Amino acid sequence: MSSIRKPKRITIRGNDEKDYHYLVKGGEDLRQDQRIEQLFLIMNRVMESDASCRARNLKLKTYQVIPMNPRVGFIEWMNNTLPLKEFLYDAMTDEERKYFDGEQGPSRQHQIWTGKFFEAGKKSTGGMYSLVYQKYSKTETEREFRIKEGKVPWNLSRRALQHMSTSVEAFHVLRCAMLTSHAVVCVCQYLLGIGDRHLSNFMINLKTGHMVGIDFGHAFGTATQFLPVPELMAIRLTAQIVNVGLPLKVKGLLENTMVHVLRALRQNNDLLLSTMDVFVKEVSVDWLQFAEKQKNQGMEPEDADGENMTWYPKQKVQWAARKLKGDNPCYITRDELRLGHSRNAAMKSFESVAIGNKNENIRAKLPESGLTEEQQVAALIDQATDPNILGRTWAGWEPWM
Image (cartoon, rainbow, N blue to C red; front, side, top):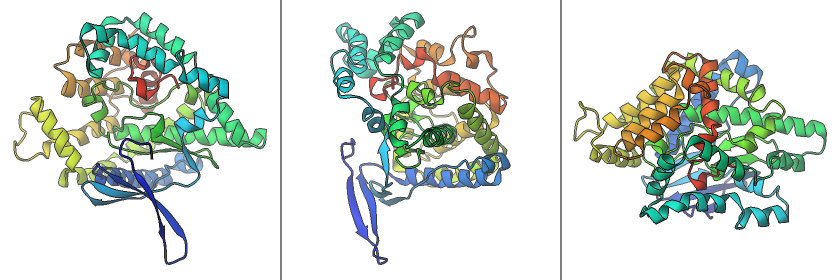
């Protein structure tokens, strides 16, 4: 397959004469994915026991992850699904694809815009984007982002759902399924700090319209803390997803679903946090590497044991606890940035963009902690849809889609 890890699909013939499809993936410690899927199962139980979530049939689609050793494992193949990137791309006409992939497409325009800083001697991607944060104003960034966003047909996602529909009623059912399932995915993945949510890390069921999140290599805030171009948005809520909810966009179904799910999970925070204890008791290979990286940057806690790396998973679980207690998402992003980018010359710009402007951004008007579920969701949505953040995001994340 075309993924960076080049996973292989295999078919296992069971003694029940049925075929079972799996991906064999190497180069990653899949214990993290396995544990996250287990946490998703716990979250499903919580939602099933909550009256509001149960009435709306809110739950996550989960799949099996079977680690064989710290570097190889099996992942259950999900039938009748397609990556969100292909789902949207297939809805384009031939002319739109040619234009989208050409010199005038948003990816190429973004490369030109950010690539100006290669001349300044910054050959690394991280260095180039750091200058994007430092040199471009909010007005310039938003203007450039709207230009790139305007190069993509606004209704690709709706068009793709219409191709799946046999009637207006079917389109309505698929639309609701896509919005509610994505809202559930967003809240659950936010609480676990899952990042790197580019288009290929979402799958959509071609029969039901339900969204499924995959690939949890960056969890508990590492996409903000360690990636060369830090992610300043906690969830993916770009135009193609928002436009499915027209005419209300994020208001109504999407926002209400997020509030119901977050309230149910916050009311059962003790259960979720005790389940996360497995990350502390058995630290994965990837987490040991991240802990070593943070230690080398001189950012480990003062009471950290140099030999015992359990301080790192404890720190990550504390981030999840803060989210479950109602801390403001943008201030959590700020604190994650400080752990990984405090020596970056663009650090002040990172913080300023992440927190936003009190005159324009809901998240900046809210306090650092003690938020209600409605306020927390409003701050999340505000941060995820801010063009000043999306316009500075790494091109491979494709924020204009």
